[in-house]
Image (cartoon, rainbow, N blue to C red; front, side, top):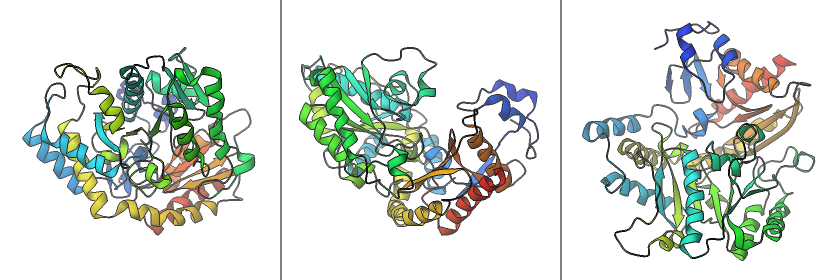
Length: 446
């Protein structure tokens, strides 16, 4: 365990053993950002300094930190049964949780396959899509379609259908038979849009071009984030998702919504599918399902997809896929308690009511130094900053540092884009503090 430290104090040499993910490790060790405790809207550093969490951890602590009902549910479950195998056996809570999730999902999505992370949920959804077509005697449908600037985790299939160059370029040829739709973002036509931009629905028609190029008989599935989160909060253009659904239906292509970020209230509804009135064939989820307390993810499948597998001899496994920790008892307990919190505190509805507050606050940053664009939807917003010439990402990283050390604020960055996604318990005061801290950090770099 690391000893208590003051802000900016170097880490001890013993800390060299830890290789931090998605982090510039050498700089971090010179100027570490450590947190040791969390409660409600706040983290606390080793010196006891309170840091406002304007990022919901990693888009996951939607109900705020260390919520007592979730803690107690995990404790009770750990004392009763620590683990149960997911292959050939099961435990009651996993059935209860599956039913609860199916009840939150759009009508017709009613079968849940559990995994342990967003990356695993994407890999699982893509495998289900491929196996679905094969089960129906359509084994030629093997091509997968993602989207530029999409983020679908860090598995090989996820980065193959994803469209973030730095996540892809180091790892070879990835998965064969993948193509991409264009990003839905065009700053020249959408800059400073509030909510879903009016321009861009026609970009869904690019799927028709890919069908003409590859033929529909070769395409298994299209996967998109309803709102592209990790690349910097890109809301879908008005009508885009509806057109994408229509084209997929026309050509017999499965539509997958990656709702790892958008699920569980981030956009003011249980899933973004409900906000936009579009029902995909598969939904991936993770993060907010347990409020980040225990790793868990999954795929919610339509009845038609599920039943395509339920043929042949009853003693034969229908889908040769799964994980040791699928539907882990502690994760199920955490998820059930989390869903109770969301329901009892009306947090999905609260997110919807606070959307305009966040929107007005972030758009007040228009005209601040280096600000090129501002976007928002639900309880998520992003501010694009002008890159430092020849050093892309440096301005964003400096803002991350200034926000944490000088403004007592935790934000997310994606290159030179700042993302704000506070827990759904945030009120007007916390939103004002978060956006005000970002403004002060920007001004300090001018």
